[in-house]
Image (cartoon, helix red, strand yellow):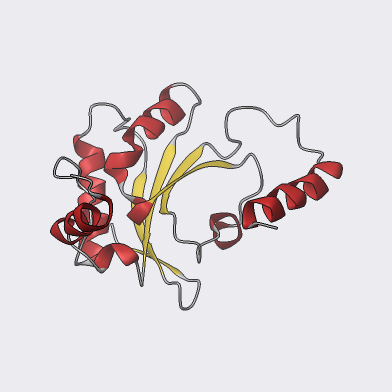
Length: 163
């Protein structure tokens, strides 16, 4: 059995007792959260969220530039009124450069990725501040709502505010 087969089986069990099919489309807590896709982070547990509470937008590094499209939809069509940007300690995005991954892709896959910004970073707190700046400079998102930046500590589960 593959891992995907296991996931499908787990979903069948989940669906048997699923009772939240009537949740409204807009998130109840009117919040969007941009967070890294790292498997060590469970945003619902870490932030006390239930199904239907918030839009959780995940990508490598929790980078805002990749989330702008989703944030615009979340805010303008679905009414979110706050944004949290969350990066984390021990992030894999701090372990390489664009040149490193481009070289690997070329050597291993024959893929030319010179046009792709993979968005690695060397300074964790600065990456959060940079993402808040990117948000503030985007014409796609609201600038009349709270936008705050945090670092999640994978070692302790604690969240600390940076920006």
